Image (cartoon, rainbow, N blue to C red):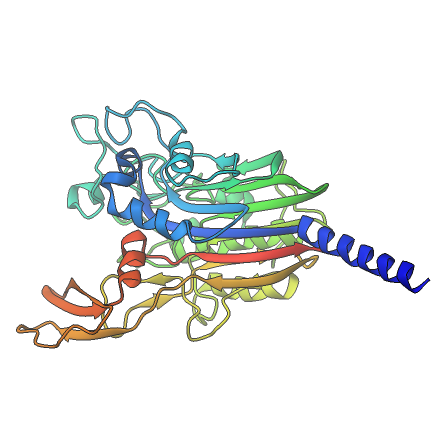
Length: 404
């Protein structure tokens, strides 16, 4: 009897372990800075950023890869030499050798749709070029169509997907007063402008017989970029309010959009992306929405207040500009097993911005240089710090979850 009881308990524990494993997902999210068609076509052999991203991704095992700032390729964009449409994600899958992740969601963002090309018909590729800024999309930003699209690659069978691109801002928020805002040239914002400068995607997949909603959102930056009448702060707030309404069924005003409904109360979901506002910011409108969302959903904001940042400014200075911008929100019927922001070693030895640099290089470190206020500065850092900086201005986030 005792032997039978032992076998029964072991069998029960084995089945419980199998059930837990079946209902577990691993998510990697990465905002890869401006990974456009030109870079993707260059491949991993000729592009340092591409090689750096691959090396970082190769270090982790995941079922879902969420990507931001991937250009949706279109014919004659950015140059007439490009003839493909919607193949950039397949190229990335091949270049990154993502075996087993056979399904995807990839649609063109609104970004850059109103950008004007050069007289040759090619689009400006250097966003810092004054001519590029002058001809950029004044409503949805970007210098070429499809520039900052969101994407996901995953192993699960796709059941359905909802892609929201053309929803007008005023359809979501009828009380919106667009006369308060103007574009960078001082012109009023168009009455029919979209809520999303990119898009909002809900991919429904089959996870061991359960429907899981993978929601992708890359919000507009909560920053004015020199335009003091920018709509960015309010637009970021309302994009996050749409997310709040979609996953929880309510926000701070009544929403009634024809043809769009929020998720059912018992739905399983993970919403992931660059939400472009810092959770702890007490001034940004969108930050207050994130904090409120935390009371109705679950929101992972990093595991250490001192190291909870996913975005870093250029250079390797002693006090870099850092923000927490990337998040994973998930339903209350999902448990987080583990989560981390993937950071390199930040240890550094500052050499300053005045020559000569006489310090001896510490063991294992390399010398890097950058421009700061028109001066060349140098420091010793570990190679992995340089690798991550070459890959993007964001750090990836990784989470493992279990559906209860």
